[in-house]
Length: 459
Image (cartoon, rainbow, N blue to C red; front, side):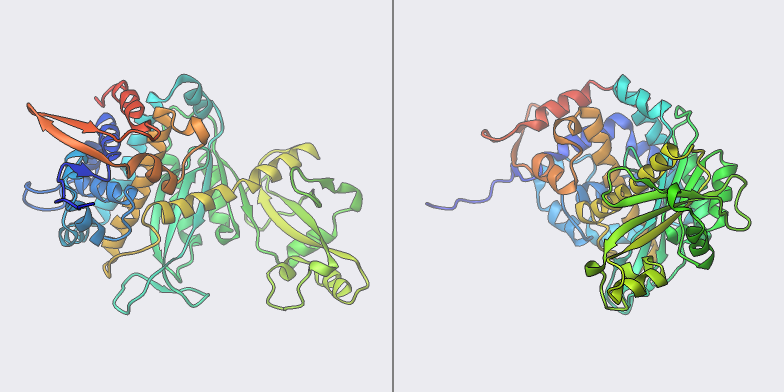
């Protein structure tokens, strides 16, 4: 066998043609430019919207750093299929550093416009489900570890890792991030929670008419968030950190009040009238307890599970007097619910909050948020929004083409393997580009392109 010269008509990213078609159909670049405004004095070169779409496309193709842009630029055929040219890495970093607070708020405002355009193009049944059902807004954060002494806007977490902390508010049923902030690793998320929620609710499509539900873990346990939810016409459920008042509320629950939880072996739930001081009227507490055999309780005082067990039960279990103990969790909420079935349903719904952790993992591993590439906080914030936009493009593409109906919604790696990073040959003839794909593999791309081209173009 002889290895011949490289063929510039070949690409390993034929699926970028589908990304380009989606971006054109929804007018993503134009919306971004309208909302962001100019990021430089001269009009030549890339605009702010083109930069973000290029970064998001690069992340969809598997690039996890700015230098990945330079690698993509070597693929000339792939560049012909991309919706915008890939900027050199140094140019991308320089332009990203020019995004000030106004431009960054414009990026977030784009989310609301795109959500409305996407919803109007969904098939009727899926659109009706989203419009009439109560939307759940999940709040969560995740630490992105960084290295290097020159990084600004990062700090050491309680675990001793130097990190930035993306703070995300997502529409749970769709997996779409509606609002985001990038904090340092030691910053408390609670003071920003109410504002983040308000911005996320503002980005829900106007067609969604049902009152929202707000769901958050104990890191967001603050009365400000609860009051902001009620002011916006939403109901809330927030996991509560264990304290003496909640332990007293647990101890006051009569044994006959406990009801088996749904889809969780050994778990029981009950309601308590306890409400933290200053929280909105109608607030109460749902308590869940899970039976833990004594032999499964660690003797290590640092064990996380030990902190969920009442001290008297823990002592009896460790001394061999009791054969089990109860691990207890608390949810403070104002969602109306009848006992016992309504309480069981609310607790079961709240456990779905784990979905946002899966979404964050996909933004990190499926896109590029496992890395903050610059010492400049503004560049890192733009990179975060590019990762979020990559997640948006993935979700919008799959829902509009029906790709997620075949085997469920694909995470970033699977989408990249099956649709984005596939080989092809790009031929230009008589002013027309022709993409030829190899035989012998699932041909999702032609069908996806056909469905996207059938969608109405952005007006």
